[in-house]
Image (cartoon, rainbow, N blue to C red; front, side):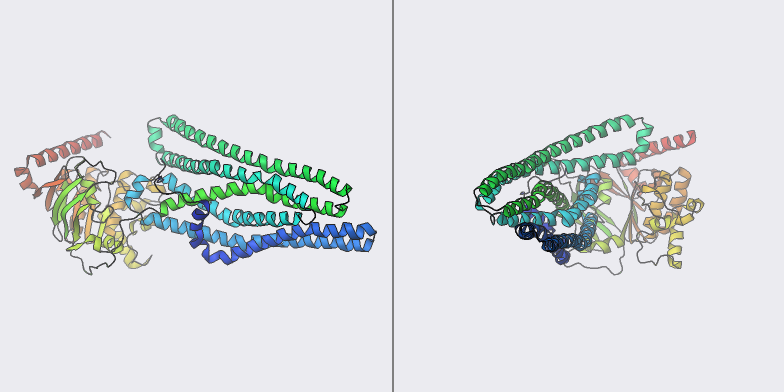
Length: 606
């Protein structure tokens, strides 16, 4: 799935690449020195034919061996100076180009962290990964090599063509006129190759997504015997990318055909005209030799234009793809004049809260359609409802993973949008049903939200042990390196229940004023769940908690229960009261009990 916005106006290639200037600005002096070195190398190469003209017309014509030797030494000196300038070009540009690459990659990752969850819902991870790695690396190579050589080679062609007129206007005119069609071919090439380059890089992103999904879902694919199905899908995508790459190669091949053919035609015509002018006495042999030596020097810059032009278009496409992410609007940002809550009490209130996704149809009702719900400080509120009633969506609003589209959410009377995101997410912690762990140690995963603790300190160890005890995660001591054991990617080396316990420990360790739990015990067996719930009761004594309940036992943790029905809170009260007064609540609890009974039967059978 490609996520580009076709409604945005397409910038010209120079304007598109000019967007990189803020990143390249700190290193422009070094890049300028690199370009100057490359230009000096080209000018030295252009000077060699002039020296050859002097040698052929002077020492060789007179037969003076000493003068010939000095002339040869001069050509050698020019060649060595040219090589030195080439080395200086690489010396000046390689370091700055990698610095630009680092800054782009750092800014890109920082941008990904700041963009809202809604952005990540729409974008494939493979598309983002290909931009982060492939496209930014391409820009580094273009800055260090493509940009410098393109500018220098174009200047070399201009200077060299002007010098060709030095010997005879007819030869210079033939060379210039014969080369003119190259500009038209280049224009046609840009129109075709630019489209193919974008298509290819987007398809590479889709392919990266397929690989990532297959690797992450390898257990599912193996369990259902769908490896061949995944391979067929991957093969089709890879074949599509291959066809696009072949189309790119054909486009490059066509421009190379003209880049090689036209200079050869120019050489042939100039040779015929040069011989005629020499025979007529209008051109000396030394001038004719110098002319063709100069034309030979110009051949590489002319032939390289096709490659460098395609490189330019690849870099332009990479820039467009990177700025697709940079240009994404982020509505979930800090307030202009944020307020602060020094000592939060933990009063969480939803006031007429509405929410709908951006791509929802106009005639669809809001997913959350006017939620009014108040959690008192230190209270545990269970949230129950049938599938699709909006429970999980509601839990994303307090920490602003999504923003309400109507109404507001307040913490201690302060709209959560008036707090900085950092402070808000310090006061409100979350644990999700789908526990995500990182490729770090158990210690680092559990203490992820406690950057205030010094690593390895006694206080950090105390918080870690307390959180693990609450989550009944003593299994970590049996791991090879205990709490310092590195967990594999996404914690897949652990069972689902172990991952959930560590995710719960992470939320507890953060010690927030408000704890939002989205059914974090679903993967636990009944006995472990009971132990965790007992420990949680102690933790939740002084903590306000909003708990999404999918089991009756989870409901028992709560002081009160809120019943969510079709995006609205239709009843709030103690469990016993709601059983007595609400038929829909009895239906929901009955369905939860049936599900829990089935789970227990599966555990017994296992």
